Amino acid sequence: MLAPLFLLWPMSVAITYVVAQSIAVVPYDRGLANSVLVLAQQVKEVNGRARLTLPVPAREMLRADETDTVFYQALGTRGEYLGGDRELPLPPGAERPLPGIVQYRDDTVRGFSVRVAYTWVSLPTLADGQPALVQVAETLEKRSQLANEIIKGVIIPQFVILPLAVLLVWFGLSRGIAPLNKLQARLRARRPDDLSPINEREAPQEIAPLVAAMNDLLQRLSSNVEAQKRFVADAAHQMKTPLAGIRTQAELALRNASPEDMEASLRHLISGAERATRLVNQLLALARAEDPRNPSNLHSDIDLQAIAQEQTQNWVHEAMARDIDLGLEGEDDPVMIRGNALLLAELLNNLIDNALRYTPRGGTVTVRVRVTPAQAILEVEDSGPGIPEAEREMVFDRFYRVLGTATDGSGLGLAIVREIAQQHGATITVTGNSQPGSGAGPGTRIATAFGRSQPIDPAVN
Image 1: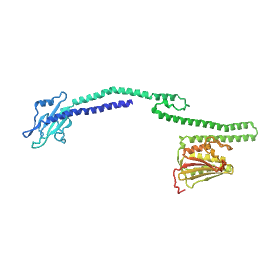
Image 2 (image 1 turned 45 degrees about the horizontal axis):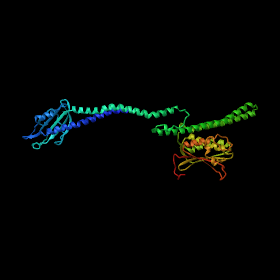
Image 3 (image 1 turned 180 degrees about the vertical axis):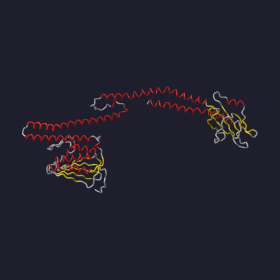
Image 4 (image 1 turned 45 degrees about the vertical axis):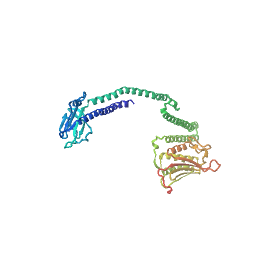
């Protein structure tokens, strides 16, 4: 705030000078006008010619000025000299106001800047009928003195007021930001893991909205940190089982001498390593899906039908190994949505993997793409045991698995599906073919509905 004050001060001086000059002009112009009008009254017609009848005392009074030099001039109707100072310049030829109207101009006489007041005097009794010219001029010393006095009267108090204003601003700002400094000190003294809210009563009222917003951010950050801690703890807990199994099978392989027992232990080692690898891959996929800053999460226009066809083909051999009928139902034309092809492929892979794991041998799994006027819907339907209605929302939680299932899994697949769907603004619904009162019937259908990048006419479909 000090810089604008010191910048405005010279601007104030300049403006004061301009205003003082305009103020000083008014009274002295009025005095010049009175002198011109008095002098004009002395121009009269005598014997058919214009004459200046100016007594000596009047001429001396006109010249009587202790500070400025006064000039005057009177010219007749034909421009002949009637009296006064011959060197006084004439007004511009185009300027000829009505008689009796006083005009002003700035000019130079004998090297001095002067202020000139002039008027035209009408002498209707003369034959030519032209007006006579009367001019009175004076130097600018008194005007400058008055302007300087006005400037001093304004500037000198400013020399006193400006330092006081600087001190008051400094004092006011120091007191005003003192609570901010205390708040800054308290924040710097906090431990890195202290995410407790800031006491709003100790903060200045002016920044209460800022403190409230910071508390909201701290609350969300605390929730995020707690979720990450739970995730790490759950992930570590889930990793213990396959790692412990791998270690146990390795110890058994070292103890057993028979080739058959060693081969069985090695097969168990491979199976445990595969489970651990799949768990790590799912954790990495979930971390990538949750990070909005990941460049691979950028969206573009993609064909959902093509993704469904490609990923379904990748699971054909796995379905045949499990004796499961894996099929694809789709549209003839491309189904365009706005999204990320890699993430959507991961979403569909998790849905198909989940369906194959929970579908018994001889069952069916169907991947289906269908469209509505405003949505593209990706469905994966299986003929497995189904999900009880009360648990259909909980299956999307991390590491959650429906009780009573003997299928291997980490409980991360559907959590990844939900995270990817949320990034695409999609909605997920879980339905089944349960009979009334049975609690869980055969089959589960998980449908993910995306907004279409190119809405279509309902009449087409």
